[in-house]
Length: 155
Image (cartoon, rainbow, N blue to C red; front, side, top):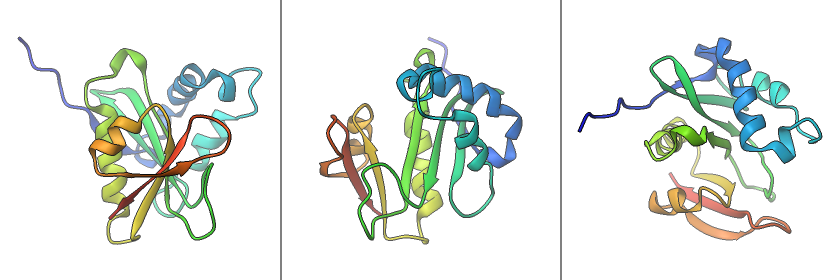
């Protein structure tokens, strides 16, 4: 059986030309938020993460030159309480490329980016709960009214 190529993670600031493709990905993965009738603005959010240092910062998962996933790091996020941060935000992988380790690679890189800079890393999710708990993240609480939970990893 042929081996699949590994997913490579880059900072978004090193691949800003991929932002239009990532906008399409966000709109497909979160249509209620980033779709035509949603309150979110994927282009604005991704453009804000196009930076080399500080928050917010973006990460992109690549298979060859093809962007297949995205995540960010931010000072605050949905579900944050006073004193909590930084946050893993906007973790999304193209459904056609899931189960190839790209989501895990994005999380690993986000953790590495924050090691030595923070004591904890937080995230809010429902869909990626299994991934985070397998990596040692702890379920802290519900994040608002929906199914999302707040997780924390000790760095």
